[in-house]
Structures are given as structure tokens and as C-alpha cells.
Amino acid sequence: MPHTSRRPRASSERHGRGRPRRGGPGRTPRPPQPPRVEPHAGLDLALDAAAALPQPAAASFAELGLDPRLVRVLAAGDIREPFAIQARALPDALAGRDVLGRAQTGSGKTLAFGLPLLTRLAGRQVADALAPLGRSIGVSITTVYGGVSISRQIASVRHADVVVATPGRLIDLLERHALTLSDIEVTVLDEADHMADLGFMPAVTRILDQTPAGGQRMFFSATLDRGVGELVTSYISDPALHAVTSSTDSGPAEHRVLVLPAQDKVQIAAEIASRPGRTLFFVRTKHGADRLTKQLTRAGVEAAAIHGDRNQSQRQRALDAFAAGHPRVLVATDVAARGIHVDDVDLVVQFDLPNDHKDYLHRSGRTARAGASGMVIALVERDQVRGLRKMHDAAGVTAASDEVAAGHHVVRQIAASGTPVPPAPEGPAPRNGNSQRQGRGQRGGNGGRALRVAPSRREGYVTAGRREGAARGTARDATRDTARGAAARDNTRGTARGAAPRDTARGTAKPGLRSQSAHRSQQARANGYAKKSA
Image 1 (cartoon, rainbow, N blue to C red):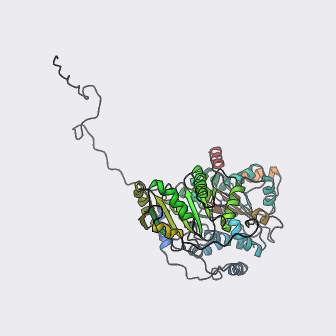
Image 2: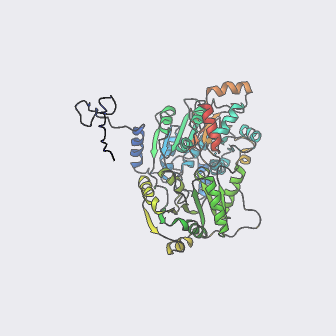
Image 3: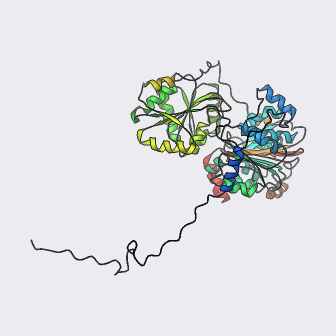
């Protein structure tokens, strides 16, 4: 065999290709890069400082200056002492200042903005919380959201003092000239970060741009990222800053990790789901929700599912049944369950791991609410442990960990926990009152109105107040007025110059003002409006 030698490789420098050798004489050292400054870091630091302040001395709603009629209604519901975010934010909100509040889900934000709203007037989740209080001072509340008759909602908006709305449906009403936001005086945006997650920022800004710049605005959010900080700096002026830590108002939620083999996951989930108390499972996808629901049912555990493919009526029926305790198990996706506010959910199971630590906290916020206790369990395989540990570190969560299999004594212990749900009543399970019906009828004596906009019917809202008569104008008047300003935002409550979910905005109207609020529930419509307004 003839001998062949390798041909020498041509130098890359000779042909002008390649990079010079590391450390070669022709290399120019890179100038040092300045440290990256997170946008709106100053606001975060200011909120951190606000959270570190001692709790206000006032120990009752009366001492905070709340209307005595509202104080009596709260006391009748055994609500006598304000939570931390309420004690901090109420005085400034009642005084008419812009407010920026940072607090986690379940911290009591609804009353923190809702009570000042009702006081100055003398959302569905917000509407449910505020309707009994509103009736005590002659204020009616209604909701508008997708998936139901828009004509009925138009009628209810025109005869309500407070309107809770999703961003998309609110924009529908604005485009039909059914209302105008030009005289809104108070706007509230709640859970703004979730509205950003769902792509409602363009809708929120579009709505906020239609509200007067001089009106009162109250924004509440768990974080200032995802565009929320920019929204704050653009639409609120010299706000009073109030913040509470994630554990200030929550009960002692216990976090646990069950490390398990993949083949045992469904069997362990079914064993846990058989417990006597209410259990809420979280999954990543709508198909995963349906699949797990069927698997639990086949295992003898009755369960219901909510996700984006279910219409509003189906989701509401599932929520009402779960709230009544029949079934005791609900399987939900992150988006569909963001607005779940059901009492006595003492166990949340993270069947699928969430996207990040913020979603982990939002899921966990469905238990240990309003001072109650609860447990959060994550079901993970061995290769997921490290990722979950990083998530826990970012969320400030300490969790006990156990390696389990089907029938393990830790699993049996969890399966026996929880407050038993009372037996099912005869006949259909009770349903929550229809907030739309609550809102119809005669307006309150002061003629004021309020608007709340949220990404979904059960989540955030935008609330705003406007002068009486603003919604009565002709289509031409409404068009002209609408160009002046509007308020709405993500499953958020509140109003901002630019738009709509979550998270959620709420607003307030001064005496003699009207307010309107709207809900938005479907991700597809959110994306559509985001593109349309881009």
C-alpha cells in the first residue's frame, strides 16, 4: 500500500479566515461593561422599604376612617380587623391619592381598593366581594365579560354604579359606543403582572389612555416586571407606596415535595385526591387537565376540570360545584384558575411543575388565604428536583421532601388530612349569585358609577368612576368622549391610560360619578386585542 502523507493545513490567517489566537498581539481588550441595571429597580427598592415599615397602629376599619355603614356590614360578616395591605393602603386611597401596592394573591387587595371605591361613591370576583357592601350604601354593581350576551351587559352597564369588566369585553363596549370613559375619576388595576402575562398590556394602555390623566389611580401587583413598571411610571403620579411580604396575611402554608417514580404518579395523585377535604390540582395544559380528570374518575374520585377550552358557563358551573364541595377535586390550568377564590381549599397539588417561581406562588395562593392554614404539595420525578429547588429558592419557600411510592405512609397521611366537606344537599348544588343581576336595577342614590377590568371574569379588574350621564350620550357623543380617555386592564383591576388583565385593575368614582368595569377571560381574545391595538 503506497505511503501517503497528510497535506499541511493552510493557516487561517493566510486566507483571512478564523479568529486570531487568544492572547495574540492583535487582540484589543474589551472595555469593562457597566453593571446591568434592572428597569424600575428604584420602584422595587422603594416598595421593599415600604414593606419594612412597621404596621400602622390603627386596629379597626373605623379607625382607618371607613364609612360607618360599611364597618357595620363588615362586622356582620365577622371582618373586624384589616389585613396588612388594607391597613397600609386604605388611608391614602380614601384621601384620593394615587396608590401603588405590592402584595401577593390572597392578601386582601380587593377590599384595599374596593372599600375606598364604595366610600367615594356614597368587579365577578370583585363584584361578589363588594356587592353586599355596596347594597348597604345604595350602590349597585355589575360585571361584563366574554361568553355571554353583550346586549344584556350593555343594559346592565347603563344602570349600574360599579362595573367589573375584562379588557376585551370592555373594548367591545367602547367600540359599540355603549359607554365612554372620558369622565372616569378613579381607576384600579389589580394583579397587573398577570394581565401582562396574558398579553393584555396593549388593551390596558388603550383603556387607560381614554381616562382623564388627573383621576385617581390605584395599581396592585405582585411584581413590577413584564412591563408593569413601565405602566406605573406612565400612568400614575407620585403614588403612595404600600407593600407587604408574601407571608404577612397568609396562614402557615406547609410546602412539601414528594419525589416519586413516573409510573406511580397518577396512582399517588388519586390516593391524595380521595381525601375528605377540597383539593385543587394544577397542570400545565388543557389536555393535561382533561386527562387527569378522567384518570381520577376512573380511580373512583369525582373531579371537575377548568381550562381555556371550557366556556364561561361550564367553568362557572365547575367552580360553583367545587365551592359547594361536590366534587371535592378540581383540576385547573394556570390561566383558568388564576381567579379561583374558594374558601376552605386546604390542599394545592402541583401535579405538573409551573413555568417559574411566580406561577408557583400564584398557585400556592389558592390555599392558606385570609389567615387560614393550608398545604402545597409538588409531585416531581427525580430529574425535576433540582429545578424545583431553584424555584423554591426564588420564591423564598422552604419545603420538606420525601421519596414516596404508591401506598407510602406519607401519602396515606396526606390522604387522610383535611376538613371533611358536608354531604351534598338534595337537588342541584347552590350556585353563586349572578353578579349581572346584582348590578341591574336602580342606581345608587348618588348616581356614581365605577369600572373594573380584568383578564377573566374571576380575576383582575379595572375599576373607574365617571360623571353621571357620561354613558347616556348618543353614539356620536360617546365616540367623541371615548377618544378622550378610558380605563381598563388583565385579570387586573384598575384603570390606566393604556389598557387591560390575573392581573387586574379597579377604579373609584367620586360622588356624582359613574364607574364601569369589565372582565376578559379567554387567552385567544387577549392575543387578538393585543395584535389589534399594537
